[in-house]
Length: 202
Image 1 (cartoon, rainbow, N blue to C red):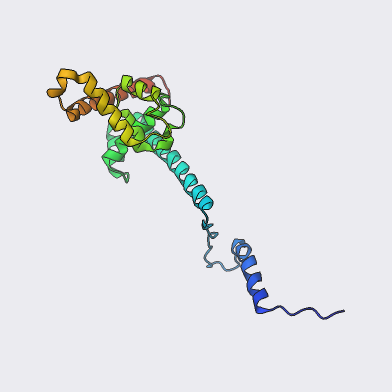
Image 2: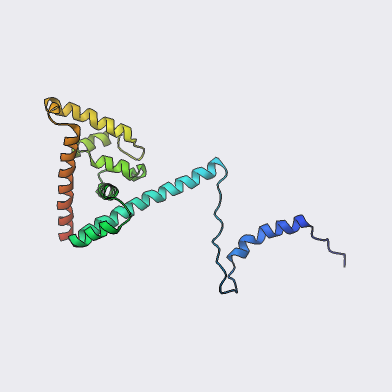
């Protein structure tokens, strides 16, 4: 038999690098050994970063929908006192909680074009500040959708309300009108939730 070639230092290093992921995946016979998680893939190219960021963004949208759904269910299924206790213990402020619930309800209502949740819950919540007629016009014009921009929605709302308010705009500020509309919408949301609960709808 011929003599086997010696393994060089470079070869040994290459072998160690190649088998390290496999070694980490093997269970240890030491009960106190720390189980290391697999090393995360580090993006290096534009394509890698694009894929990673898009995946995380898609996950974020699913997450906000899940949070909004759980909050909506909790408000309908828990007693008022229990829901208030929940709100006091979750790690989010009142503003974020209200926006998530309003965004989820609007998305789940089917009023918005498919995929609009991709614009993020803050933008979807902005749609919830529009009246039903305003929202319909915004969707028809393509202002509201998966690629919507906050600035465009704000400008659309301002422009439309200036036209509809007419002479009344001098006596009622935009903020006062917004507060009034949001209050009416919240009342409607509560009535809808109560009816859905009575009907046994999720």
